[in-house]
Image (cartoon, rainbow, N blue to C red):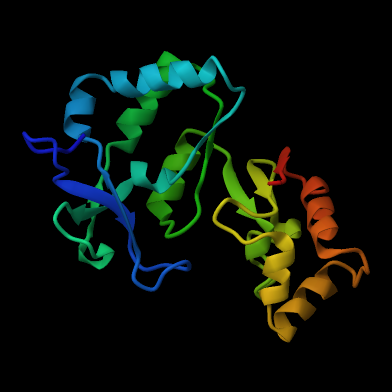
Length: 212
């Protein structure tokens, strides 16, 4: 990790201002020392993936965009807005992973501030992305999270660990937003949580995730 000689983080992780926070998020955990990791052929990651593959059939990489560029906050700062984007060796990293584990079953969490460079990295390694129904109903009929825009190369979620429950999310919408949801879902009288679950399961996406 990116630490000084006494074990203090030189830089810490987080994100700039986004959908969830006007001031960004300061997570406080140290960054990886990518220079050192690359010199070791990413052996730390290879070992980590090996243990995961012994336990699970599919692995989701949270914050996948951090493999293309990550938000670097000075270790002595408490404000995420003081950070900057720093390039990561994502292509070299993923190449090493797939060399060690051909056919590695990864899903990339490509939510948040996603750039064309992040998506290019994901597509280069043919990684499924994530689509979230709670993000779909903003009135834009080309919103990629809408079921008619789904593809067979993505995983569909009703919501994620960062979202409210489906019922809580729906109650928080204004009348126009609720109308968008109802109109798209055929003005069904079913409870909203079942509507979103059925929409996820009916998607052309090969895998649907329904958080409990």
